[in-house]
Length: 140
Ligand code: V0V
Ligand code: CO
Image 1 (cartoon, rainbow, N blue to C red):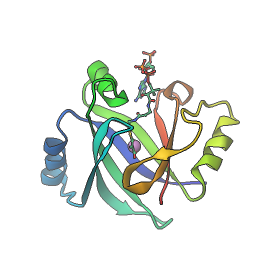
Image 2 (cartoon, helix red, strand yellow):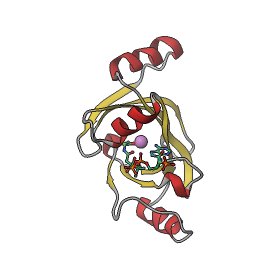
Image 3 (cartoon, rainbow, N blue to C red):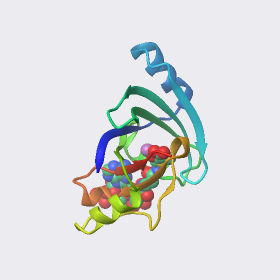
């Protein structure tokens, strides 16, 4: 089951400046920063609230580390802004993805990949989801 908004992904040019904006403007100070080489990003997870399934909801800020990465390509076309939404699962993320694929939505990966803070993630194609790049997240 999809039990929470795990995060909203926001593409930015300058991660440190954008983290500072979220801290100074809104008071979100609980930030986890890591590099995901495979996804081509340096990213920050800002915790917003705990959720009823024992996990949490975050804002994810994404700065590209390579010109050929999905976020770099998206920034060049659209500029900064909301890039994806991520739903959290309470069970196996591949099972969720298989169930959604059976409804005719393209799942981008054959198997889950590594996401922020040791999570397992996969993505649904935005063209099959009313224009929204959608990620599924299983906490470690
Ligand atoms: C592209 N399109 C989007 C979009 N990206 N629509 C909505 N939201 C987005 N983010 C549209 C684009 O406008 C085109 O529409 C069409 O899809 C094809 O796009 P493209 O520019 O030609 O790009 P592609 O096809 O090379 O790549 C698009 C996909 C790619 C979605 C396949 O971005 C991808 O593989 N994304 C998944 C990985 C990812 O985004 N990683 C970064 C976050 P028109 O113009 O044809 O109408 S990593 C992350 O979230 C982590 C680590 C985490 O949460 O832990
Ligand atoms: Co994400």
